[in-house]
Amino acid sequence: MPKVTVKKNLIIFYRPYEWEEIYQLIIKDFGIKMRISFVLQRELGFTVREHQGLIPIDPPESEGLIVYNTHRKTHYYENQVHLDFYSDSALSWFQLRYL
Image (cartoon, rainbow, N blue to C red):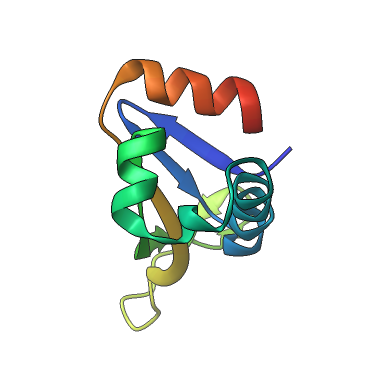
């Protein structure tokens, strides 16, 4: 199962290659026309966008104590794919079919 987060009208793929696998299935099921963004939106009810997600880095622990270092990075950016849905029914259909 892909590593995803499902929110209200949004699905986040943390591994873009997993979205690509599902996208290939969509193209196989519905045809090459699904490569056009407005057709994908009109037919399946969602749009696709690439996103740079800000992910927190857990602070290191030393014998049960949390050590804070102000010189170390606390977050990093991660490539993600976000699917923005226009209706609850489109989101439910997508989850049942592809997740």
